[in-house]
Length: 418
Length: 143
Image (cartoon, each protein chain N blue to C red):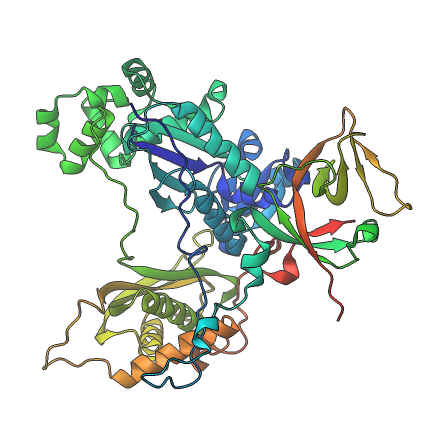
């Protein structure tokens, strides 16, 4: 067996229960930034029929009636608990790939015996040490480990751990898995595959590869091989740097004036630039967008991509250009709900060599940015910021139900009755 | 045939983070400074007090029921979830959905306070109780 996938059960909702034992048997939902949408539900909340990604105002009455615990998202808490889960997993395998905030692949290369009890030990240890419930799937390929993980969560008898060991088990599971549940098969592929009478994972795995490869790309070929137990996707311990960096938010209070909108966009631009400097890249192009609420009449949205004057990580230039874009796409008399800035084209500082005929960022700028980042790292976010970001931030997030940052802020640690 | 061995790999973010002292004086070439042998890394309370950072959390004590064992109102508690609680340990327990800090008395199946004002909590059928970690340190601040 080569791969083990550990997936945290309704991660954000589970995080909210760690320091609230009174909620461990109650339905819990977590709302998106700005309390706009339901983004996580524990299984009790799912059982009430609350759909994923539903606008909060549409389900508020169901939540209230059923005494559902509602939380605004608390990303410092989720990030810290995710780190703790990952650290715990490193005791179980020398190689761990962080696939997302709540999913990790472990290399089980060379492990042949006692796989089930090893999986059970992972699940029990993560619960004991971090109080996060996880499901564990073990198989010979990543794609099969994903399916095993889904089975571990769905089939109550398995108690959260599923090892796909025998050929019989593999066939049984593939025949019961709709093709759209297979890793990497999106909605478009599902449609095209169903046109070819391929509905479940088994039909895909046993399909005529030649006929398929003519109509699909190499990714599908790889998926088929993986379903048949041939590992094609390796463990990536060091994820690539992000190719794009976005910072987007919904406003707590809708924004109408140009100046206020520019302030918000300046903050996002400055945050995106900071993230880019952390991964040591220089930006080439910006994407800026603004929109009103899609649930209100006269929906307006607009966006623009611009090139930066030269490869740069200078917050001042990125803020200035982002503000100019906002001025161009802004229309008065609308109530804006959301805005965002993305740095969509970047080069690594390591690989970037400026040619003599091209403008480049002066060295003085590098030093200024370094001082800025150090100030903010040492003394906390927003110690030093640009005038353009504004001092009064009226449009700041609405977070009416945020739980304490139990593990990352000394003033918010849990209080224990003695 | 292979078998499974648990290998502990330190995560680079935690275990390998060591603060190095800075040489304050210029070191002349030739004769070595006699202080050189005594340069050690700086003291980190985190490293000293916490064995398993991923399983450890901080909490604030509220109340006087554990004063007899040295936990003052407002004390900072360091709690390790990875330890198996044994008789006599000071533990955090969730009792019917509430966190409380008590001493574990396995001989009489109860959670006891360190203050005669408070009665023990009997661990009986029907009570919802879970141990939420062992209190490994308590920091009382004097000012």
